[in-house]
Length: 185
Image 1 (spheres, helix red, strand yellow):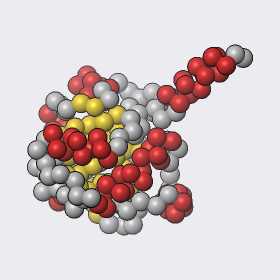
Image 2 (image 1 turned 90 degrees about the vertical axis):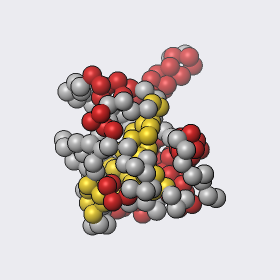
Image 3 (image 1 turned 60 degrees about the horizontal axis):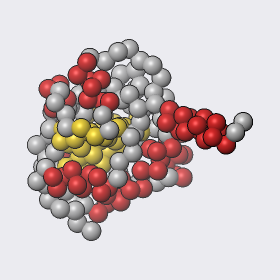
């Protein structure tokens, strides 16, 4: 196998490593919204998403109770290399900014004990909840790839969504562009 063929095969593997298995077709507006790298949401069903989950620590997390803050809702999985790579940066963003909060939604079939073991190796400061992949939160489009991140404005509306890895700088820029407070730290 030539070096070029090997590089091409490796590139294709990396590009598809965090995509989800085929699922039933989404509504056209959901598929369009999820397919862009970074896009402003225009889907009315996603404008003000609801999210109420139990974290792995047993706490209830309700997105509506976070009004007044910017919330980063990050769909991820332990098997997704780009997801793992962005976790420390999201944790630092959460810790350094009183006006920004992060919630990690593990979109995979994993039990609580396995998740806790994973997080002992890769700790984060933000809460994590394990989602049922067959019943994801109805307020959000089914992720077509991971990581999938939603930036929720203080009024509860989706300000922006990102398909693929996101950096703290991208999130801070999106907040600044939307007229939010500047990052502290």
